[in-house]
Amino acid sequence: MSTKRPIQALHPATQSRDRDARIVATLERLGEVLRNLSWDAGRSIKASHLHVQMLAFLRGRSKEGTRGVDLAARFHLSKPTVSVAVRSLEEHGAVRLVTSKSDSRAKVIVLTPKGRRMAEKATSHLDALVPLLERIPSDDRDALYASLFALLDAARTAGLVRVDSMCATCAHFGERNGRAYCALLRKPLAPHELRVDCPDHRAA
Image (tube, rainbow, N blue to C red; front, side, top):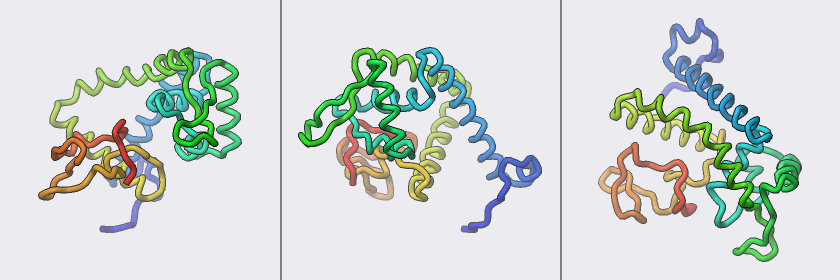
């Protein structure tokens, strides 16, 4: 497979002759949609874009809590930056620090009841995309998800993003008879059934 790629993927001239550049440009525009929705959600709860991201992340891990170092890795931020953001959320009554159940020497960050309400409101902005997806035929959506999953996994493998709870990094995940297989569910998985954020994930 060739490693030579266009160096100006967002330039119209490049897009006119290169399909992959058009894909990158489309993803960039969709990323802009998500960023704008996130900013709007943040304004509705008087929180920054980073706070919205952290609240959404913590909402999915409310039972066990999250370490500051994990937030830093997840969002590619320095520990001091995360500490400042967490302190701000703490001052707003959205999070609190508690002793980790798995390590009594460590502190983890958990949402308060107010923080859960903020997180629910902050993440509702993504619901705006669901009706748009429904305009795409079901089989095309299956293919779209499988392609996006593969692209995300490629980005993870290249070190561009950290994804802690996807099938590709799970101890339960493997292959049987040439198909993806989940040992926990004891069933093969179609490409559109692979998970990006599985609550039963166990690191391989």
